[in-house]
Amino acid sequence: MTGKFSKGDWVESARVKQKGKFVGQVIDKIDGDYVIRDAERRKWLRKEDELSPAKPKADNDNERADQRARFQHWRL
Image 1: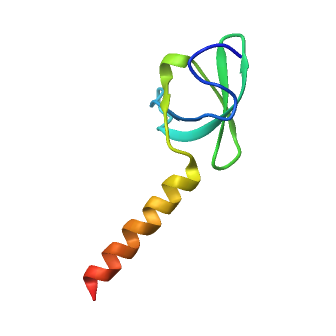
Image 2 (image 1 turned 45 degrees about the vertical axis):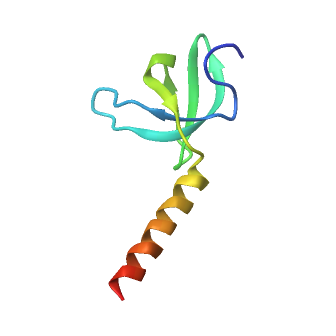
C-alpha cells in the first residue's frame, strides 16, 4: 500500500458534504481511496486529501478520562 497512510494508521476524516468528521483506522486501500473503519465499525471510502493523522481511539478515550478526572478534582 503506497501513499501517505498505511494499513493500521489512525486518521481523522474531514467533513464531506453532510457527513461530519470522524476518527477511524485505515483497513485497506482500493483504487487510490482509503477504506476507513470508524468506532461503530462502519466502513467509509475517503481520498487521501480528505484525511489527516489522528491519535488512536484508545489514546483519545484515555485523554478524555484524564480531563474528566481533572475536572472532578476541581469541583470538590
